Image (cartoon, rainbow, N blue to C red; front, top):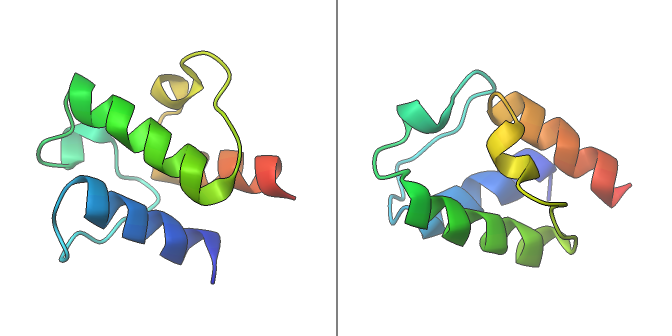
Length: 77
């Protein structure tokens, strides 16, 4: 399964929205319910799904979903 598919499933689970479809240019502002608590839940869910830990608050520093996918790919290669 691709990074994109796995990440989309994580987002759907965290945000309780089976219709949520990610695009590379999406940001936190584009996702209903992405607040500070959801951000932490998302970070832990991504770490669990992909088997790595974010250093510090790296997730918050990524500008969009495309950058997040690239970051995940760099950590899981």
